[in-house]
Structure formats: structure tokens, C-alpha cells
Image (cartoon, rainbow, N blue to C red; front, side, top):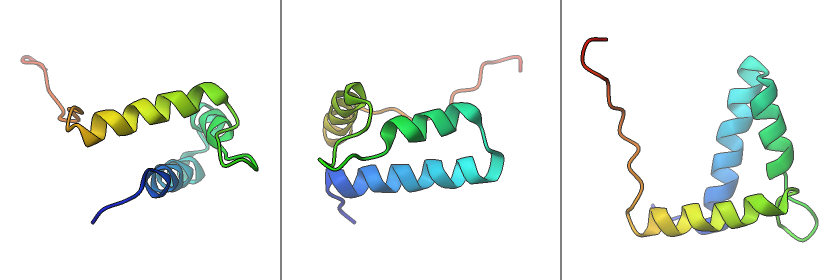
Length: 74
């Protein structure tokens, strides 16, 4: 499955929205507000547009390490 950056953004938004609806986390709610798209299809918080573009570049370069690492002794 291949997603465009816009489709990936919408998938991430839907995931976070579902998470927020289950727990009503204020932090996730604030993030969703900042990530909400304006009429120009850009996030309400312009700084997040650049962050998203950087995240897409990292993912496309296979440079994201999302593996969980547990410390010894826990």
C-alpha cells in the first residue's frame, strides 16, 4: 500500500482523533486543533507543516526507528 503525503497526514489525524475520542486527552486535543487543516490545506499551526514535511522525508528515506526498547532491570 502506498499513500500520498496528504493521505498519510489524514491517516495520522484519524488515528489521533480516535485516540482522543477514547480518552479526551487535553494534549492530544490541542495537537489535533493545531493539526486541523485550513482552507489552504495546511495545518492551523504553520510550524507543524514544516514538521510534517520533515517527518515524510524521514519516513521516505527509511530513517524512522519506531522500535520499542526496554531497559534492563525493568
